[in-house]
Image (cartoon, rainbow, N blue to C red; front, side, top):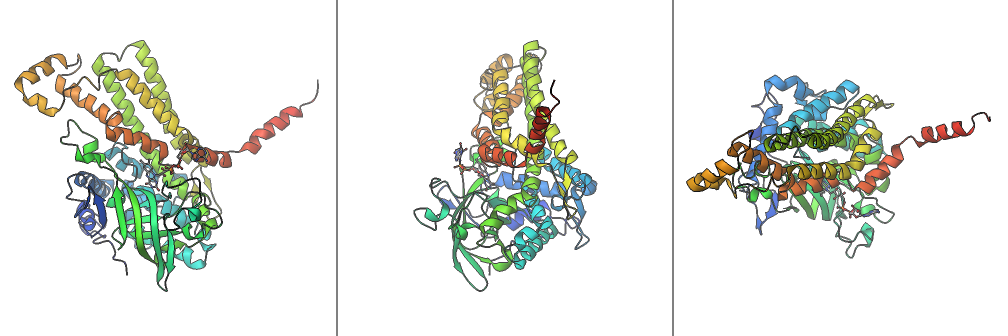
Length: 497
Ligand SMILES: Cc1cc2nc3c(=O)[nH]c(=O)nc-3n(C[C@H](O)[C@H](O)[C@H](O)COP(=O)(O)OP(=O)(O)OC[C@H]3O[C@@H](n4cnc5c(N)ncnc54)[C@H](O)[C@@H]3O)c2cc1C
């Protein structure tokens, strides 16, 4: 039997999970490979510890008594407070309440962490809201997914996910890869469950989560059945290996030079399954290409998960435009009309995205089960363009900042050298602030845009919801073209004159 995550329920946080409980649960034998070694404890590793503590802070924030209404709702099963991220929305008010929950966590991390526990929680809300989709593969799978959702909800669990096959050879389907066990798939079935082997990308935050949801959002075709699964795997399951990319926390020597990468670096983990056993109760989709596809589009899972993602993104954009404003204030350009035009464009883009988030609530619809679905066109229109819009917004800030993010001391240590400090204080000051205050803002802007951390952020915004050509296809599937062509028909049948 697979080991279960340790100490996942909290007593010290009013029934919720405390940051301490979370940190303690991470030292559970999970296999994280970094810099040529197996990491002993992710909460103590110099490159990984700070983000672990940032996440612990989110659990503590959710447990604050003053935020009880905003952050929790009552579990219908236990009567205990549980995270609102696990609330299945039935009304617009419920969806708004979910947004307000996620906003608290996003503001605590300035929108820089995409896979906080509310992300995959939102997917599981969507699955549990429409379990009939899973029933198409067998009644037990619908029961399994609802049971697992309830377990996650009632134990305040944190799941991440890996739902894209590795980029080995995109010209061939899963079953025609050079070796059929390259993509994560079933290699054996036993009485108690299934055995998986292969790799899957890219569990952001995976090394901090309790579970990894392994499934596939990539289109599959007949012959790919072994890869058409949906399973939950404990992060410490025997045979599960996590390979994070190079963490940026490693170079973050101090908080002045690395104010963001030192705190909010969320490692993206390549997932390798070396004959991982998954008991049947953790299996929701089993060798079923239709259900594997339908989980994303015939349940509100993808919409809930990405509604959370857009809530996070909106907070990040507010932070971003705040940085741009401070750059202009410090350079003395804030009242320059040409700069105001650029800032007006930036504010327009941010406002469009902010308002499309609200539009997901306003134009939501209720299905025959009484479950509320956020508006897919409001959601996907922004996601489809995010790749271009995000790049455009960053370009405006680069344009506005000139060399402001570059003409800075080499490091915080320069302030400690009397001779250097005198020059820095004299020449790197701003008309609006002393040198230290100016440097703090410019360093933060660089960490946001230009550092390795900032660059990964842009790649994340481009790809977290899938490649943009795929999101544009979602938009194509969901837009009401009938209404549009109806207008054309009407115009064509106007009385002749
Ligand atoms: C920072 C980061 C974090 C991520 N976090 C997660 C996560 O937490 N969980 C997870 O499961 N995944 C995650 N992902 C993975 C993400 O889901 C994938 O990167 C994304 O789905 C794109 O797939 P791919 O990288 O395999 O690119 P590919 O599918 O190989 O596409 C790459 C590019 O090839 C071109 N292309 C390929 N096929 C076509 C086509 N048919 N038409 C037009 N152009 C085409 C496009 O330009 C496309 O952008 C993350 C990715 C990044 C970059």
